[in-house]
Amino acid sequence: MTNATITVNLKVSELHEEIVAYRTIITRNLKAKHVELTEEMTALLTKSYKSLRKAELELMYAQLVQLRDYINEQIAKQAEKELAPMFDNDVQAQKWSKETGMSVPAQNIRMRFSEGNKKLKDSKVVSFYQWNITSVISCPWRTEMCEKACYALKAEKMYPTVATRRELNFEFSKSIGFVPAMIEQIQFELDRKKNKGKTIFFRIHESGDFFDYGYLLAWHTITRAFTNNKNIVFMAYTKSLPLVKKLYKDFGRENVNIKFMASEWADTKEKFKSMRLDLGLPVFTAVDKGTMKEKNYFACPSSEAFKNTAKEKDCGACGMCYRASIDTAIEIH
Image (cartoon, rainbow, N blue to C red; front, side, top):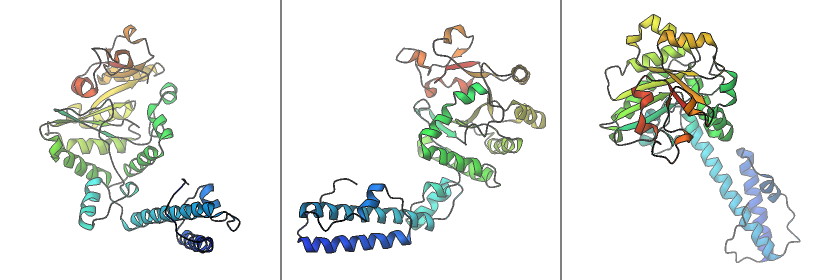
């Protein structure tokens, strides 16, 4: 609790009465709804007060008022979550919110993708979107090296809300509602005023990979819905080459609307390197810092090696991964 201060014009006896009253109200509210409290907050409800000086009583009173307000705020958020139904995507949630005047908690939206990051910067001609699911467990052909250096896993450990969102996305991606919900949301983004006249670069998986053939088929269906739309490009770095191979065999490469880049590491097995060559896929790989010049790859201009130099570019200014078929490397970050 902070050292709350409010103007109090009460006698000591009156402060005693107020403290008892606020403790009673707070305890009653906590019985009705569970709210996580810190040790300091909990102690405030049991701390002895009768021997305290007036200034100390006034501080305690102010802290109880602050605690009551905090608990009421948490209870209101819980009620809002309970009142709001579950929605498949932001389009549906925003429609309901507009009609009811109520907000929808993020946990009540089954699927949500994000807009860019510090490297995927929008410009006057390009907008970036990313779809993410839980890392590692969704990557059946991960290698020991990529798991060890997985920056997506680091983000999930550092930011609980990131992990929660990716878990929600991961679970919903297995459901029958995933394909129509994703198509609806992508079309909404294409129609937004901010994207008019732009090309959307849509990255499938900043985190995660195609974890089974059914999931890859879902993305094939989604992207095929936009085959004739030149304003969106779907791209995925992937190690799930056996699934891509089956997709090409079943539907023909010319009928697939996803640009795949094979994700390779130093410990990628030779059979997967050979499969990548047979499939004719470009490579996207990561190399140790300071070794970029030794490798025969197009050097990603967002690499640390080019930071604060004339060669430095973000993905919007470069776009090679989305527009070209060229083997590319970035420094491990």
